[in-house]
Image (cartoon, one colour):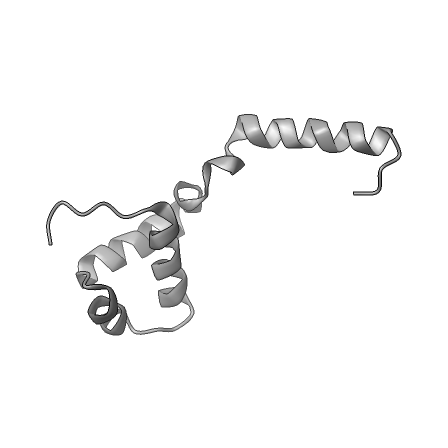
Length: 79
């Protein structure tokens, strides 16, 4: 099981399942993962959740979204 790369979305899905109360052992069997890997993902998420967020929430994109929202509000659009 070495050399596999997991997407941020997959890691977030697994972490959310653990945090919702699903046993780590059950998720290990279901996804063929080591418990230590799931626990590391959970720890990483709890310490710095932003590493699991999609790039659309990166600062430049967020700033652009805020600028667009302000322009739309100034133009009278109800967003």
